[in-house]
Amino acid sequence: MITVLKPNTTAEQRDHLIHWLEGQNVQVHVSEGDEYTILGLVGDTSHIDMELLQSLEIVQSVKRVSEPFKKCNRKFHPEDTVVDAGGVPIGGGCFAVIAGPCSVETHDQIIGIAESVKASGAKLLRGGAFKPRTSPYDFQGLHATGLELLAEAKKATGLPIVSEIMDMRDLDLFQDVDVIQVGARNMQNFELLKGLGRTGKTILLKRGLANTIKELLMSAEYIMAGGNENVILCERGIRTYETYTRNTLDLSAVPVLHELSHLPVVVDPSHATGHSSLVPSMALAAAAAGADGIMVEVHNDPLHALCDGAQSLTPEQFDGLMKQIGRVLEAIRS
Image (cartoon, rainbow, N blue to C red; front, side, top):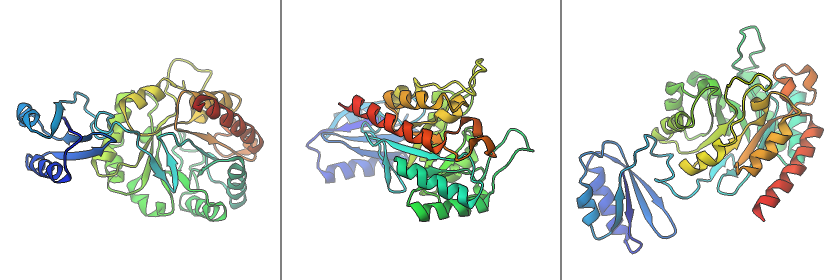
């Protein structure tokens, strides 16, 4: 349920109403706009008398929300949320590029890539330490050592770091990680989402391989219901009958998610296509579609990468893409 307060409502009147509503065993989410204050009621609101609420002098309107996702719903929070990703704003017109290797391999590799992507304009460094792989015989990542190397790259370049978690038991290892990524395979790992909801970390939530937009938003709701509202949504392609590309990049998800939710949306064209030659086009298309950022895999030697080298750009290719991205952003903002 959403209650919109009139512009002349005083803080005392607002707080008095919130106190009364909380006494009805519902959570009250407050969104302060330029003109109106919106109270989003989360929980069992069936016993709350809408006519009584509507009759209050300070209430502009009352309506029920049919969608099961509440906290991430734009109706509850009309203004775009700008998420702080290690000091880098994402959302609300702030476009950020996340770049780095699929997996951390060596000290020299991650430091060198971090320096090169920063020089090209990337704002955050990505790198996998825990790697969910289809085959148990493939490289699984360096685990704690990988996170230590990412921390060294952060110290050397100042870039905030993004890395994927697979198990809440590893959370203590992620203290130096600025943005914790939930991968596509874990999008509906609800116990993991609940645990991350109890942290203050910014979470980058990837859409599952075969999940709907509604299911993605419901997964975000799990995190936010736990008290953590620092969530970034990520479209990374879904599985269809097409086999030429690794996945099918659903760029329509960008405007749809912006319509339904106030959370920022980034696009991962690397995992979506699986081919480095296709990444620049899809990255530019994502920017043109209104994404709040992109996440691109970059490797100094893709041919010998231990993970996903086929979809990784070289530092030189990434530098060329960044110049093009700048022109696209300038065009759509003018």
